[in-house]
Amino acid sequence: MSDPHDDESERHVAPLDEARDKVARSIANALGDIASSMDDLRVRIDRAAAAIHTALIVSASELEITALFVRAQEFIDRALLDARRQAAEVLTEAHAEAEWIVAEGHRRTRQLIAEAPLAAFVPAEAVQQLERTIESFSQSNSELTNELAHLHSGLTSGAGGTNPSEPWNETCV
Image (cartoon, rainbow, N blue to C red; front, top):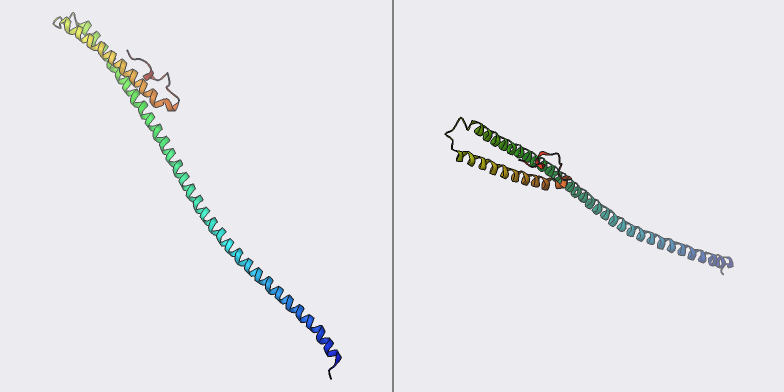
């Protein structure tokens, strides 16, 4: 016959086996969920790393482009400053030369007038023509000086306008 204690111990062992199986299935399911979550997390980390890498490349490119624009602007600023300086030099030289030409014309006219009694062979008409020519040249020189002053004003308008003490702002006689 069978021992009544064996049935009872089998009855107690069966629920323990079921509980162990349940715990084992729960652990297996939890481990599966954890593995799946880790795989998802790896995929997300890889995507984030790729996005960060792309962002760094774009950022570096933007910095390089910005640096190029800054260098280009500095070059333009230097070129404009140099052009303005050269224009001012040309205008100053042109003004000085125009003044010298006018002064030399007046000196020669006075010299001719002073020598006129000594040089009676110079016809009065030639002297008058010379005076008209010098006067016409003086007028042309005055107009040229005004045009040079206007040109200088246009070139320096970006640099705060003209300086009234500069010689090309005065009218030549």
